[in-house]
Length: 94
Image (cartoon, rainbow, N blue to C red; front, side, top):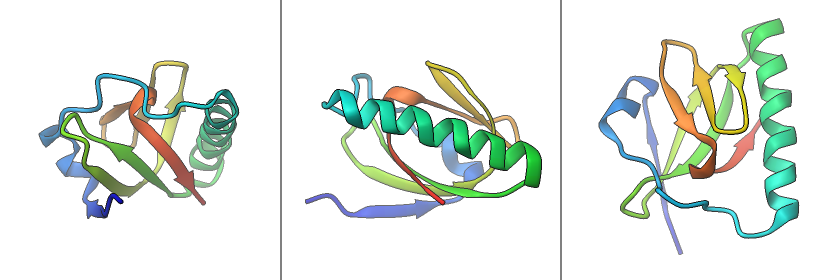
């Protein structure tokens, strides 16, 4: 079982992300995409924050609370110019 460690958005640049897809099921990937689109609308319309759970290259699970400005099939862009590859995102909490 993995334990999640909260980090600050500014610490994202210190991490390398999982090189492979962290979700196995197609439904999980579809739901992640839907959640990222919803989070992007929340960030742009209301400056609302979400909790992003992601995996690093050394298989650690990290959590960051931040605003998503844009999301595409490959990366999400966060407030402050940081980004996370979609393949490393385990989930989004609102």
